Amino acid sequence: MQEHWSIKEYKEYKDKKNKKSKYGAIKTQVDGHTFDSQKEAEYYCELKLRLQSGDIKGFCLQPTFVLAPGLKYKADFIIFNNDNTAEVIDVKGFKTKEYITKKKVFEDKYRLKIKEI
View 1: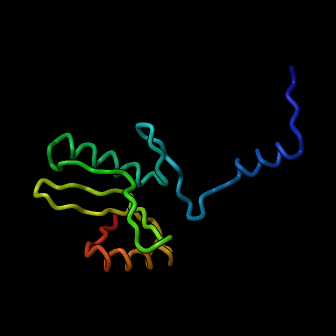
View 2: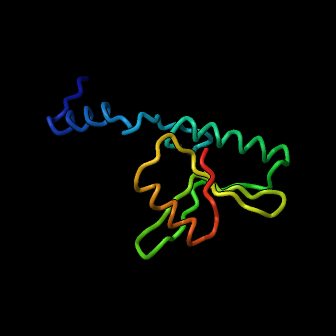
């Protein structure tokens, strides 16, 4: 049995196949979670080990913060430390202008520093 594609279906297939990340990052899946890069996935694995060893209390994936009406910042992780402090983490390969702007607004509004990995 032979499968036939329409021109539209073939173009969609080619577009998906050749679509690469703007900055060369490769999406990676770990434990059913899809991460934007291998570096982010590796950091997630590191956090799991730190949690198992009791080094941290916990962590969350992709917490979202409202900066202004219609403007949000989504961090990669938030870590809850044993001393009841928290760290907002962003795994960065490249800093876009949009990220730099949102970082400044976030740090001013929430009075927290974003730790870049």
